[in-house]
Image (cartoon, rainbow, N blue to C red):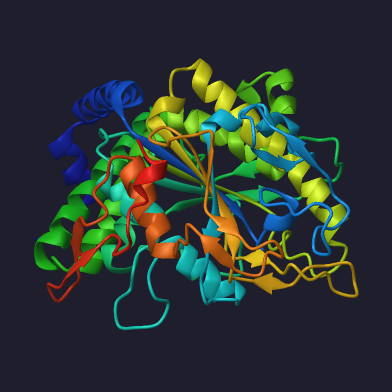
Length: 432
């Protein structure tokens, strides 16, 4: 098939192209509103580097492994955790603290992949990250925004965010964090190439898009291959987002300074605010990282670092839950707090804690979760799980059930092999 640019524009007509674009824009806005009203959502708060369970949610005061940080009573009698999480302590009824996590992966990259997929790191199957699998599985409308958005992901383990066997269509959209000249400024978060060089409602833009669309359809008719279809799907998704008002979710300047300050001015706090804005617009899956790379990797000066990180965590996470609850969204939004592993009970000579996958803590909160409880127990010296043992696959299966997705839902590999989202066991005691 041969054609000229002029003949194509004559065939489609600028007026009809503009009209179709406006109609699509209106339909997408209506779909996003419907998703906000009825959709299920998941937010992962990823603690890059491996947070110390012994200085956050599984403290061992007055023991040789306890360290100098103190614990405090929460809003739920009998549940105590770090004094540096006071706002979360007042919302303990929304939290299920899982103290029995255990894996065999003490390497950052391998641990991050395992905790993101719930499956073996090595092997022939390319398991998708749970965010990719859930964004595919959670029913949601044709929202103009991507189904999985990751804010400031840790650069050390890109494979932890891979869509694997699902293909690039379900890969996350990354929001990157810019450098701050002044710590008193709000962190800068942005999606690259989100602002088009030509206004989307201009005649020139509509003509360009129509030209591309006809050329792309002709190309696909002759090369209907998986990678070509995936590229076309991603490109059309990007165009849809550019043409919609949904992209305004990334513009945090629309919020008041008071609200932004409540979340915290850093990357994590502003990322939690962005997560709330994305959930409002119907995005099913959001991940926000805390640690600026591997900030929780506290081999030295653990206690001062954990204190600072906990303050950021407390402001961002607690404000996020409050604002979701005020908007009627928390009951449909499940939150997972996790890292690649925990830290050693033994305090090293640099006042730090080292990698420790044998026994650590994760937390579930929000919709679908039986909050106000502790599940699992570690030994008095924190060296092992003595009750409520959970592996990464069990955590992923439980998360799936909390967001009303069957963990045994199967996806197909390219050679037709069915693969379940999770082979793990659902911990029924912590899900509704």
